[in-house]
Length: 501
Image 1 (cartoon, rainbow, N blue to C red):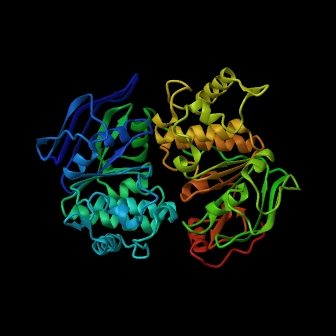
Image 2: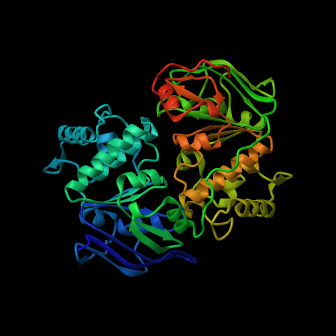
Image 3: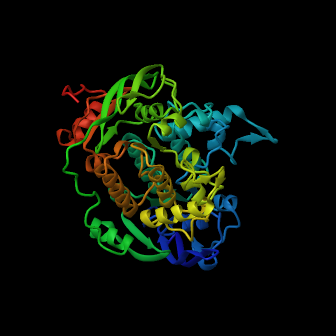
């Protein structure tokens, strides 16, 4: 008998149909992959299971009994824990307070601080992260460590069903391996996991069965061992996808448009120098904590530089302590890895988010009709799924939100694009569309500096590649002079490659 069974689940938000007959069954002690494009209904289905939404119609059963949670707390008490794609932590609280929120150890109404710290240390140790201090404020942690805190919080509830929505999006390979070991240990105890990921190699590594959602419907369920990647992608998008990465550009790169000499933003960035040409994509690889994100943030003026020189079109940009507004004026654009924390204004519409850095105005008045037309054009070009540009951006799927941020950058029309994890949390079809946009931008003479923790992405899209290691940047070499092994060797602190940039 299935531990969890969903039949004919429907859910609409106004005129938008999110689920239109979703079916799913989950067995005790298994990991089931739930896959599909952004907007297919995966997160909505997980929110229904977690008690955040109620289905319009359909039936849910857990352990053979009807299941209809009134709210998320009710779902947790029924043994269902949800690890969200976008983290739901309280940044002003400590690691321990976040992990044990709602299940704090106490006696006679008093919180037992010592027990709180001990239980937190135990959970972190089980996950292989004894270096994380239980009393550290979550706001002071990097994104990868916050993801670990979120996972430990789900484990603290002793759940029998765990819903994992893109749990590895901010994790390095060593952390992914620890997570998979934890999942296997949970399954050995009879706990079941629904695992959502856009990385098919991860899905194959940790799951046996899969269910595909498309346009809110269950279109296929089966064994992964009997299904090729091409078949999975065809089920997800409704058509075959021939090639994920667009064809390589054949023209030579143009003039140097961005020149960086001796840039320092200690302790994360140490004496970094490189050149970026028109018409090229320069990929930056590196482990979490290597300084790759801090490098891009310093270039854009979000972090203060202690020393160094930055030139755009051979002209110095400013003093080391630059400002983002000044960099925008000099033709620089930035896409943050933190979509919700730094990218979107979730209370505003798609139009307002999209035109934020290049407002259309006349005599001090915003031309709303012009901006609505501009936003509609970008939505059509990037295939952003929404009713219209007046729709709230918070109602979009993660992939469509990412497209809004990319559309804002394209609407700004910078010469130098700084892209930090541009496809994080994005489905395969949307990734392909973003890769095509990047190739078109480079072919049109834009200069692109891009970081990613996903090596196939860097190898597929970059013209040259450099690796960050403990704040230093290796020489940037043509992509065909790198292999995944050589990138890893440099990333973990091996000998820097000596060829000239």
